[in-house]
Figure 1: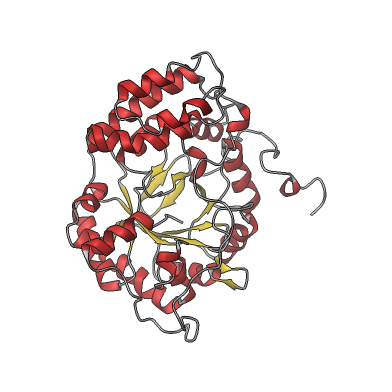
Figure 2 (figure 1 turned 30 degrees about the horizontal axis):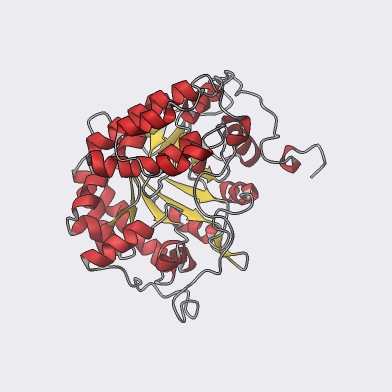
Amino acid sequence: MSAADPRNLPPGSRPRRPASPGEFAPLRIGPLVVDPPVVLAPMAGVTNYPFRALCREFGAGLYVSEMITARGYLLGNKMTRMLAAGHPDERPRSVQVYGSDPVDVGEMVKQLVADGVDHVDMNFGCPVPKVTRNGGGSAIPVKPRLLSRLVRAAVKNAGDVPVTIKVRKGIDDRLITFPDAGRVAESEGASAIGLHGRTAAELYSGHADWSSITELKQAVSIPVLGNGDIWEAWDALAMMRETGCDGVIVGRGCLGRPWLFRELAQVFRGEEPDPPPGMGEIVAIMDRHADLLIEAFGEDHGMRQMRKWCHWYTKGFPGSARLRGDLARVETKARMLELLGEIDPATPFPPNAVRANRAKRGGTQRVKLPEGYLDDLDDDTPPKSPRSPEEIAAWEKALSGG
């Protein structure tokens, strides 16, 4: 690549040029048409209905639920069922599922379709040690025949409802799995595949490898969704221009910034994005978010969830650091608003907060796999999965959307 190649530029320094007329087609996932081609990444403890609703109010796209475990769903776990439940204003309704047993996955998908789900996404990217050490999450694509069984079970039971899968590059740089995952997704009838341009070992560190997204796009005929380092609307356009992918998946960049979806809709329409909101408007958004959480979970649980959002919404604002301890303990919306009132509502959004990491720990890891897991990569035996309600609850708390 030459020095002038935009891929040589540091993140956030790529050209800022809105889409030209007809430059990007809507994303087509089976019968679904997603315009602009933007998907909210499933994130545990984040993409529940309140946050999905808030993002939807700012812009169009596809908004995926946080991950739902097949065993928890089939056993009727109250919280699992609530997180998977649909709402009248959610169309298309999208649910991400996690399961490592084809029988469980097939039955879960059948029930979700009967309940009116419009799209099913399958998680094969979770890098959490608790999951990979049992052969689940990002460990599953290591064994293509097992991956095939799981995707086949979902597609067979989904009928006309499109099934997509989400994966990482691989376990680490020595064990790259995404090419096999792409082949399996295509051959087993998945409608699209999403690729996070990091390995499980990289977690969320460094910069995502967008070249892997290019490679996958060139290798398969189904739509490819790129994931990794979409912090600004301009990053989405840059990823699609550089990789040729069919759509983008937005994760950490929208935490505490749901208006990012408004900016994405604007640049895909060929417009300059609105400036980010100042503190006064953000407080109003937080007020709305708290109301939605309280309505869904009750005041006690809802405000407990709101605590992390207080940190994310205010990150980088002058004076917010001294309030962070109190905001992390708020029990009522009134107390939250009282504390936020100590920040001047005229304060503009701090530019250095746009690309600030609001969640997910940095660093790398040595990925834990079951003993002897790599001895027979053709083995399609389902790995151990949680069975008891206690095990399921522990896994659901640990699971990551990848």
